[in-house]
Length: 249
Image 1: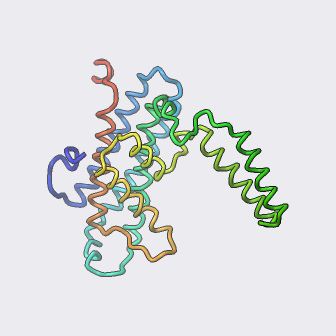
Image 2: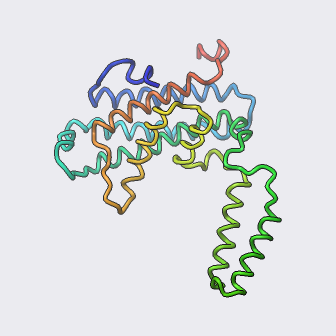
């Protein structure tokens, strides 16, 4: 998506980037609602509602507010071990906004998403498998190879794993890591774009970890925000064309 990133400019100031986040998110929401309004699908209209897009824009504006103050903090990139709450909050917001944007694209093409039957085992004889595995676990318990509580845990794990692969994954509940896997498996984005998405995911998740993990610096954050703006334009470019009377409005 390099053609979309910051309109070809090599760099930009933080205030300019903050304004771009506001402008691009507002444009994205406005255009998506027009497109969705013309969709014949009730499900699409319910998934991508005005309320949904309003929350999206509010979250983007909050991210923009954080970015405007970044000039005061970028020097921290030269100071090892400094963790600024503004930067941490920005990564959280960017992760949520990225997840939402990717979900919105899939929600519009929800029938294609369902037909892909992602992570689903087709024609899987789940009852036969559960019965056979249950009997095998019972035999292990009977022969004292495993404890009864271990056998029970194994049965529950098998039950959950089968459920995971035999039920539909609602698009609005798919998490960022799973969405990235889906986009990668369907080759919707190239390997470089997938790498940018994983950068956002890693930094969003890193703040929740007790492990000693570094969070992306301010420069990395700026690049990732610019990538997110590009992602919004990428999505809009892959929507069907609107009738002339809707474009004019």
